[in-house]
Amino acid sequence: MSHILRGAAVVGQSGGPTAAINASLAGVIEACILHADVIPKVYGMRNGIEGFLEERLTCLNPLFTKEDGLPDTDGALKMLINTPASALGSCRKKLPKPADDPGFYENLLSLFKKYDIRYFFYIGGNDSMDTVAKLTEYLRTTDYEMRVMGVPKTIDNDLMGTDHTPGFGSAAKYIATEMQEIVRDCAVYTVKAVTIVEIMGRDAGWLTASAALPNLVNGEGPDYVYLPEVPFDMDAFFGDVARAFERHPNVVIAVSEGARFADGHYVGEGTQSGAVDVFGHKYLEGTAKTLENAVKEKFGCKVRSIELNLPQRCASHLASATDLSESFLCGEEAVGAAVDGLSGKMIAMKRAENPAYRFGYDIRYATKDIASIANAVRTVPREWIVPENNNVTDECLRWILPLIQGEAEPVWRDGLPVHFVIK
Picture 1 (cartoon, rainbow, N blue to C red):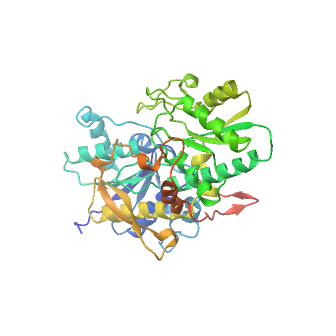
Picture 2: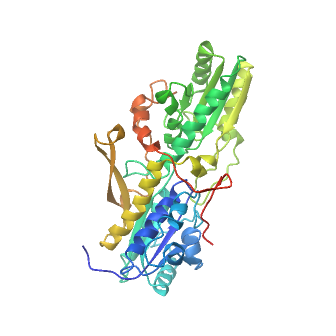
Picture 3: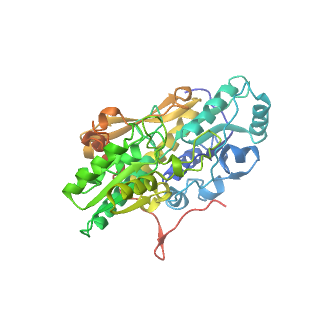
């Protein structure tokens, strides 16, 4: 263990929310409270690093500590774990490179000193880990001792260095459940019809792959799934639909919002605004609508498109208990690693075989150098996509299945789940 570093902690959330991001926040808060001798105060930054720069901070200790000084695990923290979205708010702010704007980082450092911040925890995905990496790089040039840790989060499951990411399991559970329900709903009529469901995923098709889980569990999932990892071919797609019609009148298809043609253009590009965020990512939409129009013109049958949209990441009532537990432990592990002297790292999960657990699945926690993680994308392995490019293998589905196990236990009041709001 490194020497003891005493000072306040600050925690923030960044990027797109998930149904489990507050579980990681709860893990950070509880661990900080338990390390009160080292971290006497933990602040929450409103709207991530953007809010921190504006000094929009909330002291979290009074909200989550009981009178005896212990964490309120059965009350406020439990409710926070089962609350969707980012309780502290989020942002999509791209930090400059330290060498390009030293004044920006000098301002940050002055705020760290003002609030005696010695521990910095950032919960997020690829772009958030970029923030952790740049802050780590800058702090190495100063004599101010501070420990910076990344806590992984993203429904896209596209972070490098970890077996999977917190938030993915809950989103996969929701998508698989919705697909099973859609398939059953579509099967009630004998009229020829095609239903196309658009699922989130810009560069990685993990979420779209999860739509096929009902095929593994009960044999009643979508006919085809199309991922962004392989080129989308319209003629091959029409052939797939025609073959599905030979089996039954109601065809159900899952497609990633990031599906692209061989030339790199998005399938839904003609219906998109072309707008981009600060990280240069295009806002994607319209893939299912484009395919709906194409099928209608080609086959002349009834067609509908469905965009699952925000519920994929905010349906906390259908969260995976496994996901919530792992997300909480990632936050807890980040604090423990920082107190032990580590910095410039991200908490990572490593899958281990354990026959004592269901599916032989178990997870171990480790730390990975943030520089090797930021700005890299982890995609579905090519060998997990069938040669026809229109589905995933059972091996892929068996890999995902343990992540959706168990049901959340939110607090209910008058028929609705109760959420914890940090005011």
